[in-house]
Structure formats: structure tokens, C-alpha cells
Image (cartoon, rainbow, N blue to C red; front, side, top):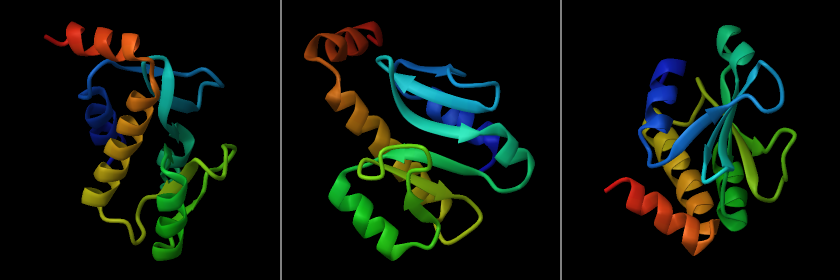
Length: 123
């Protein structure tokens, strides 16, 4: 997966928006105004891309134990976020699943009103 594929994959999801809320380097994807994926553009340019993704705390622990490329979230809640490094032992297919899981987890945390607005706007 390259940065363009990541960009297209994230933006293909319902109601996803892109932002640079922290600086000109950190690309953030949000759904319903809440972050589900963050990445550093400089890291992509340097050949060391990684994503911060939200996850279930129990699953996060299991993933960290199973993969060398998955660590507690950099500059994030270590319980709820993982940093997942590309070009290591996490296949692209699994990376896509982790992004989907992060999106779904954040979407489900939105109020029912916002969830319904998103679902209705897509029809």
C-alpha cells in the first residue's frame, strides 16, 4: 500500500473527511468529526510509513504480541490506539482490515443521531 492507496481507501468510507489539525505533516482521517486514522507524510517520504489506528483494548494487546510492526499508539492513548508500521510483518490485507476496524469502532462511538445522519446522507 502506498500513500495514494491509503488516501483513496480511507476516503472511500462513508462520511470520511481529511484534516491537518496538528501541523502540516500529520494527515488525519475522521468520521463524524472523530479521528480513526493518522499518519505522518514525512514518514511516507522517508520510507518509514506508519498509521495510528484505534482498536479494542483487548485486541490491541493481542496484535502487539503477535506482530513486530504493531506498537502502542505514538502520542495517543496506549490503551485505545496502536501504531502500525508498514513494510514489516503486517500484510496489506490485514492493514486494510485494521483501518476498517478503526473506522467501525469510531463510527459506533458516535451518537445515534450522527450515525443516522451519515447513513441517510449516503442514500
